[in-house]
Image 1 (tube, rainbow, N blue to C red):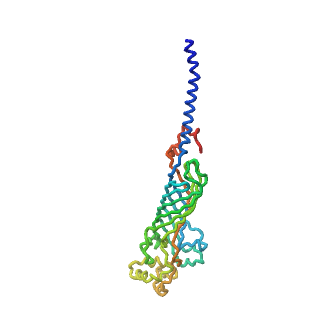
Image 2: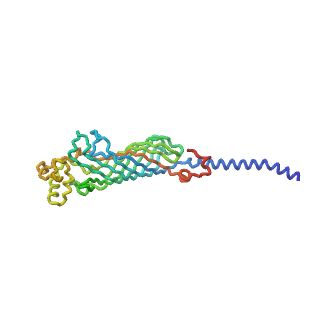
Image 3: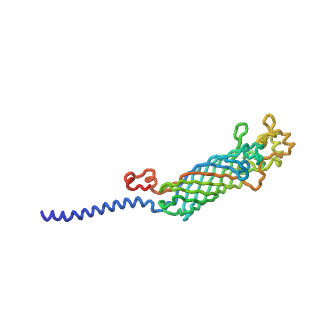
Amino acid sequence: MLGSNATQLNRSPSMKKLLFILLFLFSWTAQSQSFYRYKFEEPFSVSASIGATQYFGELYSFWKYSEGVQPDWNANIAAHYTFGTNLRARAEFSYYKMSGQDPPSDPRAYRTPRNLDFRAKNWEATAIVEYYLFPVKVPNIHRSLLNPYIFAGLGMSTNNPETQLDGNWVDLRPLQLENNPYNRNIIVFPMGLGFKYKLNVYTDLTFEGNYRFTLSDYMDDISSYNISEFYLDLVDDYVTGKNPDRLRLAVRNPSFIDDNGLPDVDKILQNGGRIRRGSGLTHRYDGYMTVNIGLEIYLSPDIWDNLIFRNRVYEKAFRFW
């Protein structure tokens, strides 16, 4: 009996050491697993943003005159992929509104007498490459707190300008007011700059300015300087009743409107169609700019558990943000 008790006493310190080692290993494993999810790069992410849209064209000449700002709005979603040390690819899908009107234009532009306006609600899909100032091919936990970037790409947008006639919105593209058909879809070239601010391991706050160059001068349905080249066709459609809306929409200048609010055909014919529509700059295409703020989320495998549905058992012990 004495020998047996002595043996148990001798074993007790060994059991305590073993228990201590097991507890240490369990704690170390739990903690290392908490850090493990930050060890690897997360190349994929998704984002969403919203902001202002500003149109540039025949009805807005910010670059030449003091036009102020005439913003509309846009929203987009995007998927991102990191493929280089400082490079990321982005596929983006956007909805945007834009508009322009003559009445608030700079008097030096002499556009107010035209009395023209338009609006458009378009969809856009683009593929973009982003270049960052600081490396992005790093584990999430090592992302820069603030990382500026530039970008450029290629995309396609719908093109559906419209204006009001007798209180109703009318699609302008099918009417071909300038006898020059243009496509429903146009090519766009997005480019600009932005920066990302790291909110936490999984999320960035984004701010971005994006100007789209296009290959169309008909986003506002206006290109020709005046209607002299096609005014006879417009008048014929009006007089015969074939499509009277074409002349009514092409000529909105009060000087060529009669007392009933309709085109004065005699004045238009006597004038020879020298009624201004566009700016006369044949080399300039329309464009638009967006300024957006949004959120980008990196797709870590355990994001749903640790960002939205955090594991409450280890929350206090292994919470790092």
